[in-house]
Image (cartoon, rainbow, N blue to C red; front, side):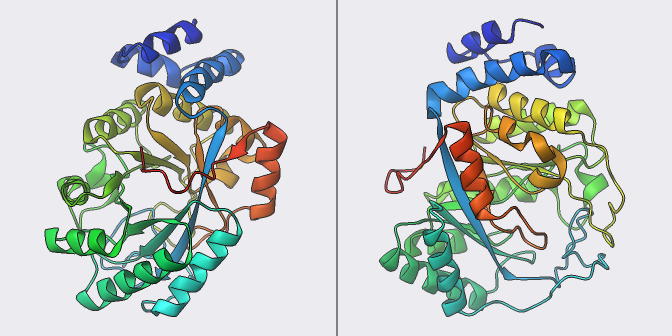
Length: 330
């Protein structure tokens, strides 16, 4: 495939890429990379113009997770020297929302380590969400692990707009990354959020020794799952984790992955997420010709780029922060 713009036009008409076409994106010669991104931008601009959604994370509970995910510094098998603490109180979570509001983030993401929330933890989150909704014009995304149906309903009633639970990798590659839960457990949690009337958010981590076929299957699985928001993380291998020392990614390949996700999920919010700074490096701005959303501030246990630099990057690109906070999630 060499006429990326023609392929983009077909996608806008409803065409779904074949496996061969998807693979050709990941194998795109670097000398064609700008043409590939131009095609991705055609799709992105059609649905989102030049607007960029900003999201901010608060890590409300750190470490002591009983799961064995190979990428995670909070895993039971990780020896990474991270800060560890129990669930924050409501006031700390609300204070984080104030900071998100100040930095013009449209979505505030409340994240906690663990397999799933206890009743006490869920109570803290729902209480905080209610107060945040009263004080700030923010959308709330919760990421608390595997949910029970009644917990999803509690979050919905409290005002949670979106629930994140990443599939992380392909079904075929899942057991190489974690064995303490099944791929189907993750899919089931996303579906429980949908059934409760919460917008589903689910994404991936690229660079965990998966094949290009796995990456294609990730993008197609999220299309089948109908995730409204798709965070694309690029592995930032942390010393002390099972994937310590893994370094498979280049900035150009990361851009091809973002283009693939846009071609395969044309209408969805695609967010450049963890590992953006260390993997895309100086090519970070180019990623926004395919994606339409980024995290600002820090991630869970790793530092992000200063929010002021992110705002400057958007300004230099001629892109706009999406301030339309009150509209329903797409």
